[in-house]
Length: 241
Image (cartoon, rainbow, N blue to C red; front, side, top):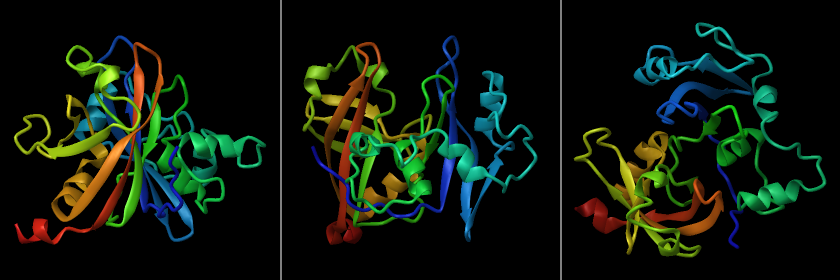
């Protein structure tokens, strides 16, 4: 098992909502939490295509923040911290281990939310770090998106823990020209979360990424695949190209 020993403080996290069973099961960016000096501000993003599409699939807002037009500044961090175990729990180190964080890591509550996603079983919400302004060197731990679409062409036996993975830009992608696919020697098996694709586009053009499958859990029907990776020093050959 590998561990991350240092996490940079994010400037913002994106609130993502996944539509429920019976709908598309797509994920939509519906809001953002921004670190502003020594406080945190939450706002919805109502004038976006994602927000409009989320509403069409049943999105009705985050329960603690009902007004789409309001900017929230009181109790924002505490509200979202209810989505993760409290640090005072005796087994909190086990929670850190699950997310490949060293037990003695110095990580803020805000960074912890972004690193883990702060998911709960049934409400469809998560908090995603878009890696704004983060450059090499850096370690990341991300969930593979879209694996369920490739189950017929690639099996879990082809993507065992420790398998090396590559990230490939897809500028020709009709849905998202910033899309980044994830593949092994056995083939493509998923994508980078769309809200993190801009960062991966930047990294792939200026840095070297070494990554592998670190963890597989979930169910047989819906396995969850996590990748641990390292962005290394700037690749001069890429810059020259």
